[in-house]
Amino acid sequence: MSGLDLSASAMHDGRVQKALLLENLHPDAAKILASRGIEVVTRTGALDEDELIDSLQGVNIVGIRSKTQLTERVLKSAPDLTTIGAFCIGTNQIDLKAAAARGIAAFNAPFSNTRSVVEVAISNIISLVRRQPVFDKEMHAGIWNKSAIGAHEVRGKTLGIVGYGNIGTQLSVLAENLGMSVIFYDIAEKLALGNARRAKSLEDLLRKSDVVTLHVDGRPTNHDIFGAEHFAAMKPGAVFLNLARGFVVDVAALADALQSGHISGAAVDVFPTEPKRKGDPFSSPLQGLSNVILTPHTAGSTEEAQEAIGQFVSHKIVDYLSTGSTTLSVNLPNLALEQTTGAARIAHLHRNTPGVLARVNNILAEHGENIEGQLLATRGDLGYVVTDIGSSLEPETITALQAIEQTVRLQVLWGAPQQ
Image (cartoon, rainbow, N blue to C red; front, side):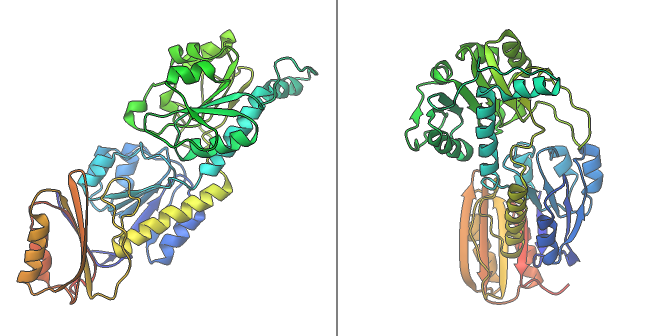
């Protein structure tokens, strides 16, 4: 498959570009895109596959959060789509390989809501260890039960962090400031911060931790990684948090461990199946259990975080459309680019096979185009070369570049022939 994009950020094949923003994104996202001449349509809630296919006709940019599933079927049925903005951390809701194969760039916000998630984790840990959810439920039921039994300080307790990435490391630092001892487990080699220690194994972490919290990513291999055997391996009376991904935990097994008393409390913000829209019904085996905090996937949803995410991702989209920069793209080769004074800029995404760069340059030479600057990056089976030339492009040059067998998408960011 190959595609052609002509002209600068607000235009696509001579038409104003159109963006569809779903799932109640922060208003700044729409404002930033609209300020660049992009037509923006916003809709509340997520859409299913058939709704998405209908809604993405003629759309060049789509903005989503975690509920909307951009499957291969959806992407295949959206021929005008060039850019995906995931206004969240995770990207498992996007078929990134299918998007890359169609030359669709995807961007997310890997850092913008880290602090919000960490603050919720800290508050949940303190609440569960102090049995605040139990006291709260009893008070609402008219029961006065002033007791210290089962309520503890977090100081001196051991926090076990599974997944020591952006969130896990920041949580590690704040937990130490509360007087907790921190151990962590990660499949990748990670630098321990402060006095945190790397556990020898996941089983070692579970055996030693008073609190276990999950902060793993959404890769497919993390499906169902935490089940009954893991809860059984935890210390009796430990508490458990999942603020990461709903599909990583066997929720029924967690409910059993809570009902038996082996796990004394839990906080869960993400679920295997979540409602698509605000106000839709929700059901879980964890409902009604004591010392359990349930929240509707809001650990990263503060006004500050959503504002930062809206600005970060929309600026990434604008940079990509206007300069070709793919910095922090999660599925295309990464190139950091700026505007230049060159007469034209071509961005050529291609299958990464020998000789493509030479073919691009030969075509430019054959058509009398002088190269003023050029950058190349590769990522797996994709290559991405951006070339600045000293004169406006001729239609024949574009046709020849487009005809290269390995072409996935050709963008003429500026200097395109007049239509």
